Length: 118
Ligand code: SF4
Ligand code: SF4
Image 1 (tube, protein in one colour):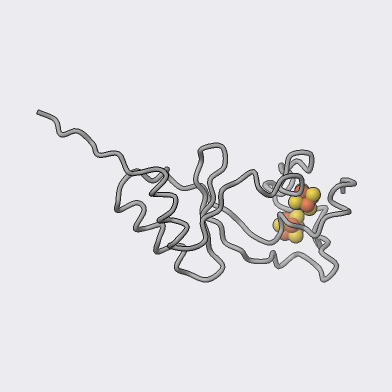
Image 2 (cartoon, helix red, strand yellow):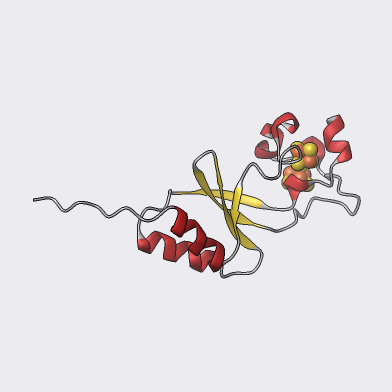
């Protein structure tokens, strides 16, 4: 385990995230509004990519925030580099947790209307 991880409260083990298609239409944003209506769910944008974020503690984490299956942890856990993780900059992503925040995002980034083909 890295020195950084030893100081951390296992931030990366308290959620999982799935990449979403980038929303472009009113319907896409309505789907996002539905996702974030659920408890412990948000979306975040990182480097232009959108993710569905489910805040749910991993079952393999012990009360001291240590992985109980460290030697056999899933590949996705092994790939995470503690030099480049959320421990260092938790503001590197834009998280949208509420309908109000989503409306704010849409005010800043209005949906572009597609031109109709002639
Ligand atoms: S990889 Fe980063 S977020 Fe995960 S335990 Fe280590 S320092 Fe914390
Ligand atoms: S398996 Fe271990 S390293 Fe992976 S998320 Fe769970 S507690 Fe963290």
